[in-house]
Length: 153
Image (cartoon, rainbow, N blue to C red; front, side, top):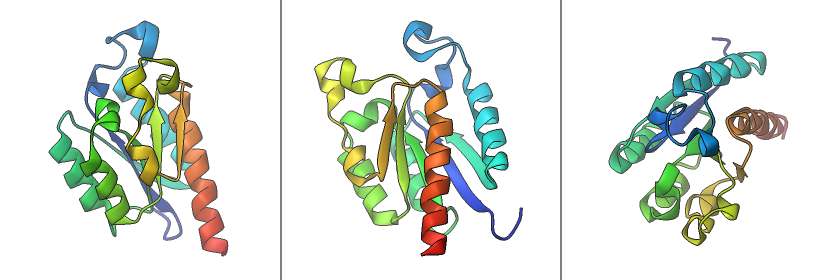
């Protein structure tokens, strides 16, 4: 890895391990492995080093966020259903002080009412939703722009 290459953590929460098989009409046919490869490849093209993790456990998401401080330059987070319930994840994002982009495959604002509230968005630098797996690549683009702006400033 080049010394000027930023490291990015792509962190996926509950049920994302079922991508490609769980409700493909909502979440698409691409598997998590396929998505992770696309993220790593797109990151390489942007001169970003991308690492991916997935867990179904809220505490493990918190541990991954805490462990990211001092290791990664930014985070892309799809917290799944924890988006709508976890004050702890919001607090962790505030605490680690890393730019975080919230991503959702579906448009959470066009779905059930309970999905319209995101605790994550309060702490994130932005939210991308409704573009399927392409949203992750958009998030990488956004983080690259954000980090490059910070480097120049």
